[in-house]
Structure formats: C-alpha cells, structure tokens
Picture: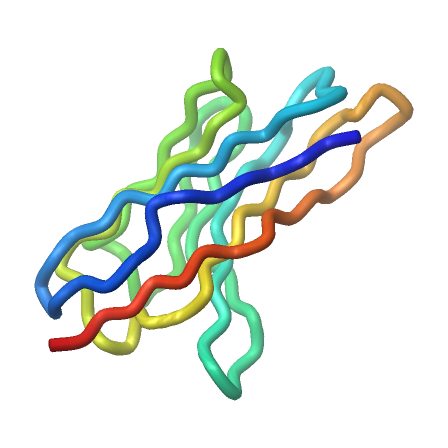
Length: 119
C-alpha cells in the first residue's frame, strides 16, 4: 500500500513563511505528477500547485510569485515553500500524487495539514 504523509503546517503571521513537505512511501514504481491542494472552510478543494515528473511547475494564479513547488524524486518527496502568506491562504493543505503502484497508475492523497495565517 502507498501512504502520503504531509508535515510543516502551523500558525504563521501575515507576511510570514512556511514550508510544507509530503513523503510518499510504500509500493511505488514511479511518480508522475505531484501536487498540493487546499480546502478552506465552506469552500471546495482547489489546486494550489503541481509539478510534473520532468520538473515543470504549475501554480494557481493567487499564489504565483509567492509559492514555490519542488520535488526530490530520490526521496519521493514534494515540497511547497510558501512566502508572503496572507489570511486567505488559511486552509487544510493536501498532498496529491499520481503514481504507479505496480499494477497501474492511481491517485493518492495525504491526510492534510492545517495552515493558519493570522495575527
């Protein structure tokens, strides 16, 4: 079985920074796209950023220039560096990976990590 485990969330003041990490473990043959989604109270889950297996990033407009996604394939890990955080970035952040678990491709999700931006 495959597990995705996020870490790095917390409480930060507006303008501050946080780095989220997500480690994928288990029966993994290869990982295609890795990404971060978020869900604020009362809102739908939305894509924040994703990165392809050849390193191409994509960002939602609201985080461009403030967030940076990266990945370390040797560690099956994806990161999200978040700078200049705003109160509207407050949400539960979920890691997602589209990977080959040995019997085909499948989407996996982490359990989520809370990010709260408040003074």
